[in-house]
Amino acid sequence: MSRSSGRAEQRSGVDTARSADGTRIAIDRYGEGPPLVLVLGAFCDRSTPSALAAMLAPDFTVFSYDRRGRGSSGDTAPYAVEREIEDLDAVVGVAGGSATVYGHSSGAVLALEAVARGLPFTRMVVYEPPYIVEGTRGRPAGLATRVSELISSGRRSEAAELFLGEGPGVPSEVLARMKAAPTWSQFEALAHTLPYDLAVCADQVVPADRLATIDAPTLTLSGGDSPQWARDGVEAVARAIPGSELRVLAGQTHGVADDVLAPVLGSFFLG
Image (cartoon, one colour):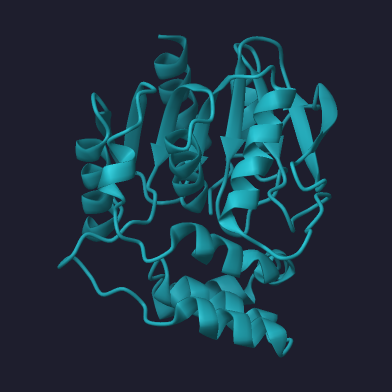
């Protein structure tokens, strides 16, 4: 999830990538400059970061895409995390063959797994990949199975609520307000892709051995008002990636504000 600070200006173009298995991946393109690919997490499609993309467009060509199963992208079965990595590789191909990459939440995990497998990222920023360090909180048991069962029985709203309550740990009173809001229908619409996010995050254990192979300059970010377990996970990622820079954005939560995030990305990527 992410928080948009407003509507974006007009896109500069729409692209299509073809993944290795033939799946169509829809991409929005903004601006002109060095390529920057945005990889977002649960309940997000390519329109979600439109305001962020508009803020970055004066300095970058920003590529925001629908992960498979979302928006206008295809959803070739069976699902596998490897197919999502191939999708991201196809998007980077459209961007010119290499790119800077920003990943948020499960999108941050996907970006980390992709670069660890050799995708050509020149620089990378990850915001709160939802890893859980042992002893900081419990890992939700069988969450992927339970969410999938609710989706299979058509209970999409319950699946979204279960995911939010046990995954990121959204408090019950906040969930109640979210469900009462008109935007809840968007959560229901993308609920069928929650098992994909859960598969990407696997057991939520920091894959320190894989992260240690990353040689792309990396900035790891967390919000100063995020739960301690989330900040601990980000710190563990920063320790595992050689030379990684760690930064905490004061006053921010998992839904980082675009106007706070954009200058941080611009500074790191242009630097």
